[in-house]
Length: 88
Image 1 (cartoon, rainbow, N blue to C red):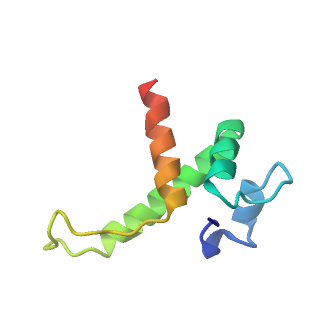
Image 2: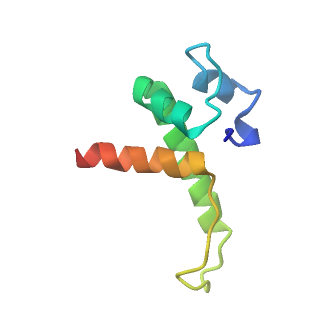
């Protein structure tokens, strides 16, 4: 799993790769990186929420409430980890 292409090779990518190891490429690496880096956690959550907002903005208000909206796994992990940390 890779970060969405709009995050690669940018100043944003540099922020996400603050430890010099590069961008996580699978779920295990992402989970470990989110646990060890508050900066990555914040950046990933901000990106995830923006992409979720974009998905909702592009969905018509007449859509059925069970209509599928596709989000990258990285976004779901970032949002779920954030919510779970608040439930601890």
